[in-house]
Image (cartoon, rainbow, N blue to C red; front, side, top):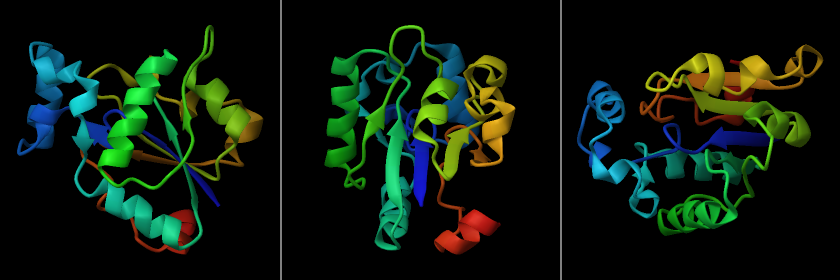
Length: 164
């Protein structure tokens, strides 16, 4: 089973979001004055995301990541953050010239796609699953979580995650 998880706002978040409520985190993004928003090297896990993904990996899941970045050098920073916070190894995908998030998901074809609702930036253009070709949607289970809400509440058991 392949699980693709979106990074920014779903699995990881800006450093100054720590200790804040989910609503305060969204307001930090909307306000755009928090310097940690663009300091991607200082990003931290959203809740216990690394532990949850390790739990799924131990059950045999392949974990892959979807970055909001468009430049390889920025994705390298994401990879360092993932390593530093003990996220499971996994390929980090990102948009190349002219690509949208759905193009990546359609190419990778994960069994499960976990992404946030993009509350602070607008779901209509930024979410992945709604833009996936209709004929491929049946092959990908979509799990949408609240932006900056983390994935701690999702089931530890992969079977329950897939069937739930």
